[in-house]
Image (cartoon, rainbow, N blue to C red; front, side):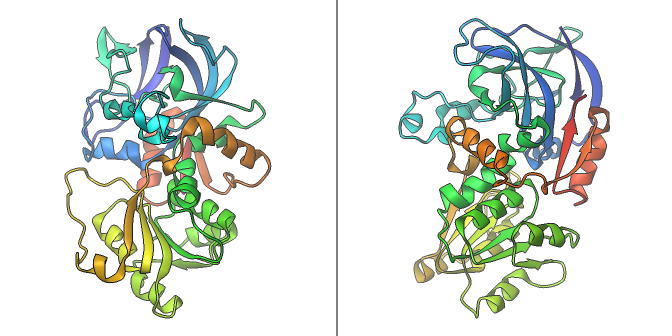
Length: 368
């Protein structure tokens, strides 16, 4: 069949909207009509070359849609199901999965290979391979994905909103509630108020944090952050966020700090804003060629501060995402405030420019 998709042919280039050939679903695969896909900085890291990936490819990984066809061997999903795509499919058999750590499934080793589990691509243009991204490739009208990359959800849930639960909102919310296990009456800061940072804020509010400081260089985001439950907002272009955080906490620092920006400088700021025994959670993706964070090593034993990574918010997507959809449907998971603007597929280059320029918290590509 044919599908319209946004293809990128080399790093630092623009998307081109093209008609591609899409193969039939093979064993264990499904065909999904995509209804909406979030624009995420993880896609941007491939565009900039910060993350190695084969080209040409169809990016996009934070999607929701409707199942149109199932391949042989598919057991738990049927035609007509509404699904959220996930970029970390859990096999349920490896050691991490057996321990309830599906976000660390061994299948993650091949996430950036550009091919599906069978080692093949389903997209072709004039007979040449077009590579997949994170087993999803959501910037296409139709996609073939592994069954395990789809989570069946309530058909009443709006797909153009819950698509965010495929990546950013789940990663942020889980980082606060699952990775850090934030306690009520805690103090916390968030560096970077985009898709992931807003998910962290939702998680902090639901956990009962008393002081929540949002750090972001875009002043217009303050109103949204305060509306969603933040108590303070800092523009790091105007004032040192570590110094002001220490001032706000009487020189002590915060219990928890979350790095959602993706740079060594902000990672160091997260660490330096912590109180003794505080936890810093790193979520933002950095240039994979960078291998140092400017932190004094002696401060670790002297303060017992911790730096922790969080992958997918320490969530097993198949278990947690249906819960988060239910929270959203009961008005307890604010996705409406996060979606700043929607774009058509043909406007995808504008959508990425809006993200780069700090004009959105989350932009959405919405298919007709």
